[in-house]
Length: 437
Image (tube, rainbow, N blue to C red):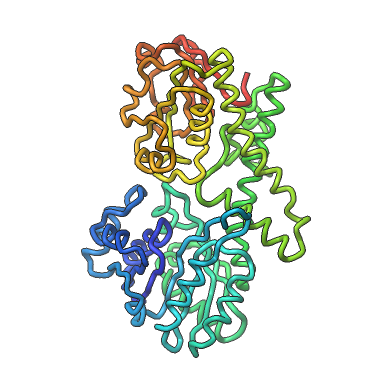
């Protein structure tokens, strides 16, 4: 058993703390937000992640997990994970490191000789080196980087059965001790055969942003092909299937549609570009600007397509948007493509109703002027166009023949290319999707 503190109890930290406790470690989760700590203590996290309520309840019932706002509670721990957010700086591309700096500064006054601080937050390369200098006043403490690779909606699964563990450590005996400490923390995962890669700290810092940039590139590539397919009269879904059969390419993330959003991919690729510029290597990542541009154009194109379906104007038209979260199995609406499209249509005169199984409360905080209805069938009543913009199973499984009786006009826009066009057309619907005939 290792005594562990986890600083920052948002999506990453709360899941990480719960999973570490389930692996048999003694864990204290620390966060400056008292209301969040109260919610987590009740096993009622202030965000939705499948299975997290039970994980927290079981871990706290075992006596191995607790939450607090008191940083002095970290004093008994030997390994300290930093899991705070690194949002995009207002008006800039770069990441805001205020929360990381504050977390490490607060921890540093409670460190003992031999303690290990482990960064998990996604940060610009070079951050670990800067932080290592800031804890020099805590003799015998060291710093490593252990990037996270969690997918919202699958965070517990990704924590318990990760595809790899990356340790970024300094050279020499200090680095070897850090590796030994992390091996003890992740002993059960390593025993199950999880791959482990030990690198320098700078490489470890780059792994997450490089991986996210690659995924964003793959998504935007197929969406660029969707633009071309529309111009050429080709079908992007069939194109994706065909090129995905190439083992060198693979089918994953070749899903044409509305593009990516959320709190990670958009801000990570922008922060990656900003850091490259600071290092004098901005030319290496200029392609990411076009990746970002392609992604944002998908939202504009979806609005244009919806307007076409509404005979050129949203005035007097009711539009139902299926989905508010940026992805299914989440209530996260940060940079949500679905809400962005809904807001644009509303600004152009459309009467927009948004429905979502989990994210309505969060969506209403960001876009209070939109109408919301948690009941999908009520939201569909008398609508002139249905836009599927978040691919929740509830929406993918809708029976087109059954719901046709509810709508004013049977027109569906498949923003995620997940519906069966033939099935919907045979049920009497006008079916349109990005990049498809």
